[in-house]
Every structure is written in structure tokens, then in C-alpha cells.
Length: 267
Image 1: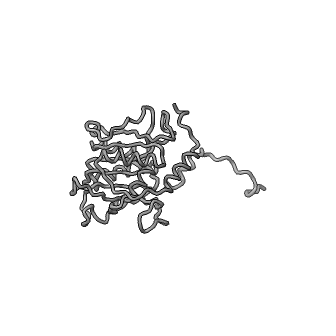
Image 2: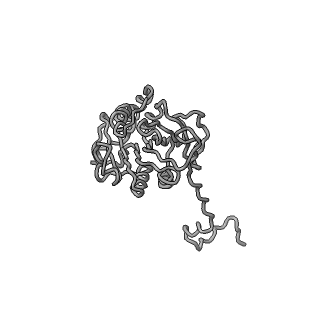
Image 3: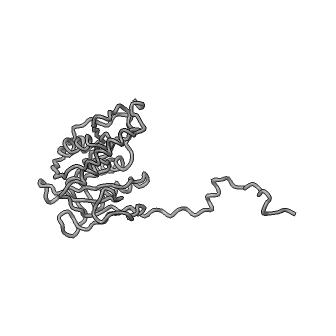
């Protein structure tokens, strides 16, 4: 008599990929959304917002720089349902996993202040286009967009010195007619991906003036100074910035010395 517990079961009549047909698909993630507490003028939020300039901070230097701006006003946040809020502080902190939205007063256009979106948590590749669409339509209609991102060595074709800061740009067709940034274009055959690329594509489709600024190195005082002295003034931004944290400069030096990749191998 056969022992059903110990005998080797007969081979399955299904291919391995066919077995997935009997499992329920994972439920789709809820869509990201914007939550506002007040509009840039301090009153109840009136949609849509039409900022003269929308700044999207993705790189570590830009996040640190705008975190040190003393007169920004928190007006809302971008909610990603898959990102937990546990561990976040009550007051905005660089250690939080958040996507906060701030208002920066602009003396030249007081009725249309500058908006800043500070991304302090990673955005998955499958969510980038949804987030980009959220920031350029429905509730926010920016006249111009500035995206601050970092050069990723694995995506860059060329030589980069760890002792010198560098910045490159990509821009939409509308921005190219009257460019604000006097920078070299991102080298041919180099790749830009993630939220920065998705935002630039969304702005191109909507005919919005937009510039994507890629800076190097990814950390440190050199690139911090480059953004503050050369990139932001091109958009008529004069920021009142508190003292720069020395811990950030030390962190940038340590990260550079421990970096396992050498960009020269991609030339």
C-alpha cells in the first residue's frame, strides 16, 4: 500500500508560471495625494495653486540648503500611502521620511510665491510618473520648475573629480527658448532616471518651462556652495540661510572617501 505522506508526489502538470494563476493578485497601492493646510498667503487653501516657480529638492545638498532657510512656511505635504510616518518628528527634520511642501516669499511676485517640495524619502520607480503628474496638474500649475538632483556615477559617461564641484542641466523645449541656467548640458550617453526625469517629461508634455540641474559630488560643502551661489541666483532667489551644519560637511568628506566606484571607468 502506498504511503501518501512519504512517497514522492507525481510531477505537476502545470508549468511554474501557470501556478501563479491560482494566487490572488496583490491589491493596488492607493494613489499619492496632496494635503494642504493653508495656501502660501496664509489663508484657507484655494485650488489650484499657481506658483511662479516650483522647486523640487531631491539631492542631499539641496535638501540641507533649503532646510536651513529661516523664513519658509510649511503649507502642506505629499502623502505616499506606502511610506510610514512612524519616527517622524513634530517639527520638520532632515531625518524625517517626508515630502513636505513649503512657501518661499518672492518680493517680485508677492501674489504668486515660490513653492518648494522637499523629498526626504525615496520614490519608487513605479510611483515617479504619478508623483510628477500630481505636482504639475490639478492642484498645482507652476509657471516654471527647477529640479535639483545629483549625478549618479553609474549613469554618467565622463570624468568627474571628487575635489571639484560640477553642475549640468537638462531642460524642456519651452525653457530652452529663454534658458535661466548658464550650465553645460548633461553629457550625451549619460542617463537620468527617477523622479527628476519623470518631472522633466511631465513638464515637456505640458509645455512648462523646466530645468533639471544635476550636481556633483552628491555630498559636501563644494556642491552646497555651488547651488547657493550659481544656481539659485539664476532664478532670482535670494535666500536667508542659517549657518551651515559642520556635520554635513564632514559627512560629505567621509562618503566621498568610502565611495566604491570610480567614474573614470565609464569614459
